[in-house]
Length: 424
Image 1 (cartoon, rainbow, N blue to C red):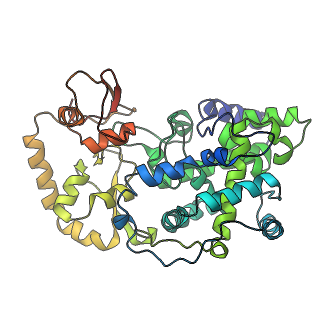
Image 2: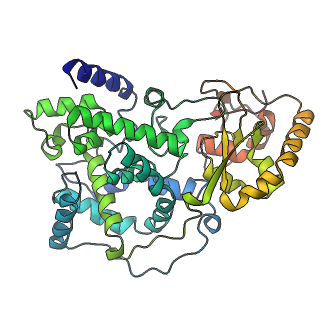
Image 3: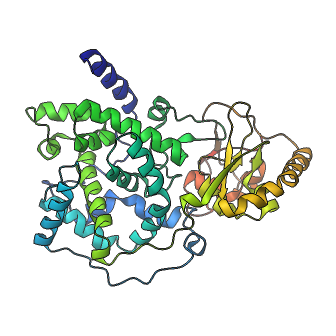
């Protein structure tokens, strides 16, 4: 690649990363003298807590996990010399520079102590997502270990949303997503599409590697942007090793790469620590897709076919309103469990008859498909409550709570809510 192309690529990515820079902030006091306190460590992967307790995909453990494997006693600490040996093996077998240091040891032991109960569930999700990730990582010549980055980013929740607006398994900001062909419309957010977002992440990581020629630095740039990594290299006196430039990176990024290494270690040595995955809800190879012929909602599919709405949400996270739009030239599909596809096809006419009947009864049509992130900001008034607002806009209370990350039904006068209305 000539100098002109390299400069153009750098500027192209840097512009997109202006909004991406602090999407995974873990606090400005995370690193103190190069070491983490236990309190600080709990912030690094706070999405673990948030996902397990607030994600609709894991709110019903009996649905998501249909059986718990008996687990052995979890080893919540690894002895230093053994850790050095294992990290050396990971370093020898991966393109990353994984060396022992007290910082990484502290992160790993903290994760084992405070997060071990969450890993079986994360590993169950990994059973579904990792084969998909590996297919595209291999296709784009990105190290397969990068699949663990999605755990650090989103705890494998395709509908995860950061407080600054990053979304999806790979936590793309809106502008960066657009650069990598992840479009957002009134119905669809392709940042939440597992396949499209994974392809975009592979392309982005490849571009970062082409700039820095180092996967550790590509990781750092994924979090903070290539501009910050380039400045850190310059401030360090030209060092190209992550650990040598770490002190010059934003504090969030200084904790980000060790969090990735710790996650990689725990998944690689899960068995040795007594960690075993719970049963996954479904395997990726056990699904199929069918193109829709009319705009149809998950509720309508459930009513006709009996496929659980929660399963439809799990398999089709890109549809923001739980509605699959029919748009000429877009070819939107519904992903289903493979063993349910025959039943779906047999009842397809009945499904679209229900759609026509519901449309005839609807006072106003569903919002038209728009190529923008259409949403409404509603100001809570005196006398408002969630049920009233949900009825007004034709949505469910659970959706309003999910869009606004509400833990209870309590509202305050003047509070602003984000709503994606079905009824205008």
